[in-house]
Amino acid sequence: MSPVLENKKIVCGITGSIAAYKVCDWIRSLRREGAEITAVLTDSATEFVTPLTFAALTGKPVYRKMFSGQNEERIPHISLARGCDLILVAPATAQTISRFAHGMADDLLAAIVMATEAKVVICPAMNSRMYLHPATQENIGKLKEYGYLVVEPDCGMMACGEEGPGRLPEWNQVREAIISTLTPQTLYGKTVLVTAGPTEEPFDPVRFIGNRSSGKMGYAMAAVACQMGARVILITGPGSLPAPAGVELVRVRTAEEMYMEVMSRFDTADIVVKAAAVSDFRPAEISSQKIKKTHEKITLQLIQNRDILQKLGEIKNRRINPPLLIGFAAESDHLVEYGQEKMQKKNLDFIAVNDITAADSGFAVDTNRIILLDRQGGQIEFPLLSKEETARRIWGRVVSRADRST
Ligand code: CTP
Image 1 (cartoon, rainbow, N blue to C red):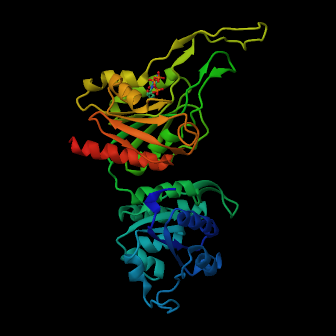
Image 2 (tube, rainbow, N blue to C red):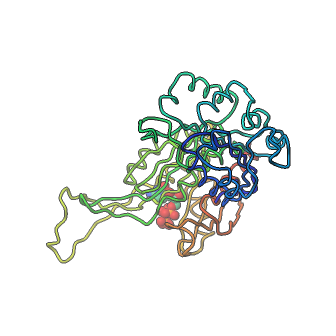
């Protein structure tokens, strides 16, 4: 759930492609997150889906014609164009894209898009040859010049049996694009380095020491930074989460690998977020063969890993523009006290502390309850929130603090 979508008025333009049926689900998702949707169907869209379906899904009349008089408003294009926060055109056919590119306001949807000052997100979907045709590519280039966000189609098997680019992208990707478009780009121009997930420390070819981190909080920090316009590099330990749209993903396994990857990119980062649950120890030796159970007991000797964040804290002031360092602390008691100690010890600008003993926050759940401390003595406790919303609140504080200190 993203409050960015709450109470947003979205005009959803549906055009004549077989992928139109997929947008039914998208509308349900948008409404679940609090958006208000008005559907506008082109004539050819009605060959694939019925206006009734969209009326039921949006809970509102569906608009089709410029002058039909079917709805209360006889000329709806101006009021729809003015009264919305965003126009989503999905699926967008080659024909509709061409219409937009050439400023032809000869149907209701094209007229609304021309008359609006709202953001426009376009999701092309068509046969891959049509998509790759120079005319379509040139038209898409024009739409980008006009400031519309064009979400690249996916590659794969099409309904027409051909394979290639042209499939409507997955909802998650389009959702990210919509949220980014509606989010002020306060991290634009910044490079954000995020670490996430657990690390695994092997002691034979099949076994390792790990931890329960899922990476969700770090992935949320990366996704929201991306939505706010940052270039985001996400260095992640093992896990099954899909990469947030738009981030540069670097996969690592051990703490030592994470150390190397972070260090090699540290100079490019304006902000570093260390949400990874880095293993503090690793086995002193790694057996090249699987350890057999020939003994009743075995002893693993562990040695300490390097503390990545501590190292960054030591070297950050060597840079002319020192980056902001944001740490996370997993604590079971004395949250504020231990958090403050870690912030001092590692020379951080912010630390987000969470109580790992609470069932609804911390490891492997979708929600979190964070206390955010900053080096100026600020302390704020966020309520129980989704990890995405927690990330949004943390970034809000970081951006406002950074603005005040420049
Ligand atoms: N961290 C790190 N490298 C390590 C260990 C921790 O970069 N080898 C970072 C984590 O990513 C986190 C912060 O340090 O941002 C605090 O991690 P945490 O595990 O809470 O604390 P530790 O410093 O490991 O101290 P302790 O386990 O003793 O509480």
